[in-house]
Length: 585
Ligand code: GLY
Image 1 (cartoon, rainbow, N blue to C red):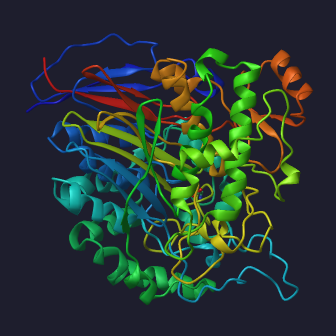
Image 2 (tube, protein in one colour; image 1 turned 180 degrees about the vertical axis):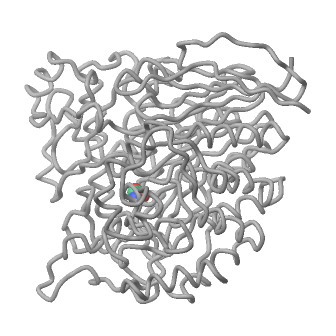
């Protein structure tokens, strides 16, 4: 059957992306070939399924899989491998991620393929003999890498809930790697910004520079080694990555650079199927990621605190609604520092933290006219980061949906490419507590719950989330943004459910973030008017950080069911695309 794909909207670069988003539409299955005029509308709407990711090429591959009859899980796995080729800052083979799945029969599951600490990892491995954290060791060294989980997670998801073969979902990524992709301004610009970090490592420079010089827009970018690594996964499944040539190359690089990951660590890596965190908000079900993510728990906790308030009546952007959200965020993030870690190693009080009665008690000291003081609760430091994780949302016409978030931690992870294997290694070890109450890269602090132990998974904020109504997926969302991740889906959900916004407006709407410590509100331009800021300051919110247009909060590529159709939105803060699939005409 002939498929016809068309671009229905183009995206402007820079901050003007708030106004337009890229949206591509594929028509299919029954031969629909209706040409649609380019539109400035940021929403793609079709009736056969929808894929929204940070990369137009990856979204297209996901939509092609749906068009070929694959389900949302097939498409998510194809997207995962494609992002490793087309969005190397966060898409990966050498990192980890989470996948929250809502199946047509009403079942929900979560796949945890977060990296694990190597067997030789120790609690104090990032401290010097004076017990001080060695700067850069947890982010820019071979020690910074956890045992990668993405390949295991993607293949386990495909095997359990997919319908297509490994070859069918991996081949599109191989083709992009081997034949190459033409660099757009987004990718070429990203390589140029990071070139100083790339040239420290010859194998990294060989991929992300052209003989040490910056790649330019319109250059053809070929990743032959990555293509060969993907071929080995296609041929041998998990053994094509965790054993054999790829494993040999990875372990050799670890030994060369003083890292810890061994053949045994790779052999022992496994993804885990977990029960998602479940909550409810005004009659809608919230399904999100459990530990080792903090995302699902905090999201549900904050929604529980907010549910008793008339958020819609307060008005979007009003002093009262921003104050109430900040206070919910402050309390939830304070709990994160103490209670959250890998629940396989630490007794995370999940049911207590997500209990509505607990939220009421936790919010009992909320004063509608006055800010609380974070310092009276504990210690911490500030988040400052760009986008280095990435989120994809997929929904199919059969009733399946996938929220998938993946990461190398910081942009391009440790910046270390495995020579001969063509992929970057994560620096996820920095998400552990390196030393009690010493801030990590994101300014997050913590204690024993998130200490380093062999085989343990570092605490994450990734929050792939599905909002359901009557056991069917309604809204799929999530975001990058390190510690700020969780407050992005929170605001997208509130914008849709409380403020009645369209998905496009809900995603584009300027956001703000508070994470308990430091006691300050990060605000995107337009999120808090000068008058509102003055009023909030008078209530005790003293610190406001206005974010630059190139360092905004999140990239919430989201999809939503609207009546019988699916709507997809690529967050205008990023350079992604939503690609729809038409089922009938
Ligand atoms: N590495 C960011 C996170 O997982 O929260």
